[in-house]
Structure formats: structure tokens, C-alpha cells
Length: 139
Image 1 (tube, rainbow, N blue to C red):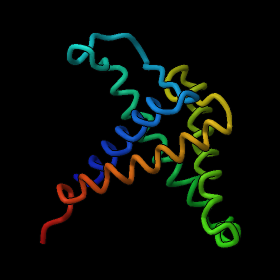
Image 2 (image 1 turned 30 degrees about the vertical axis):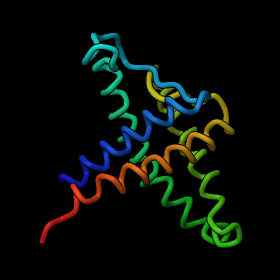
Image 3 (image 1 turned 120 degrees about the horizontal axis):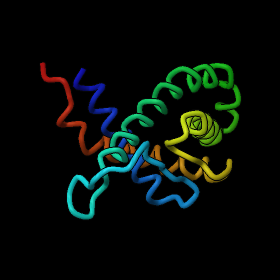
């Protein structure tokens, strides 16, 4: 259970960094609220990041794995570079969920989705490497 919450935290932070770096990604919180600390984000914004990190993980786990299984030969031919396109498409699926809810992660177009997926995966990997010793199972 701790690993689940750690991955959710890592993905939320990586999503926040991707939105901060990539100009084609925007996060719209579900409501207005007071800042958690001076100059910091509001509680609805933080909860929106956590919710959409969960939604992205769910979409990535279900739809992403199905795409990866079907497109395995293409992964081999492109040496895994097609994964950027797949992750960009998964971000566009999160965009569709956001449009349905009226708040959340919005992606400007497909190319920003690919760049956002690249930043998201690199940031998630770096944060995961830093936090791995803290979450590692002790035997």
C-alpha cells in the first residue's frame, strides 16, 4: 500500500513538473481555494494533480498495456521510440477525460502531448530514483 501511495506521489510531482515545463500542457483545478502556503499551490490544484496522476496511471495500466502488447513488433523495429507516441496518445486520452469532467489536464495538441510524455517519464524516473531507497521493502 505504501508503494502505491509513493508511486501516486511520484506521478503527481512528475505531472506538476511536466505542466510547469511544457507550455502546451495546462492543469485546471476543480475549484478555487486558498494557498496551502505563501506563494504555493491551492488545495484544489494539488488534489487535481493527485487525481489526474491516478487517472493517467489507470489509463496507462489498462489501455497502455494493451497497446504495448499489440504493438510489440513496432516497439522492436523502432527500438522503443514508438513508446513516446503511445504515451502522447495516452496523455490525449487523459485530455478527453478532463474535457468530460470540465477540469484537469489539458493538452494543446498531439506534439505537445509527445513532449509532455517525454518530460513526464523522465521526471518520474528521476524522482523515483531519488525516492527509491525510502520506499524499498525491507526484509
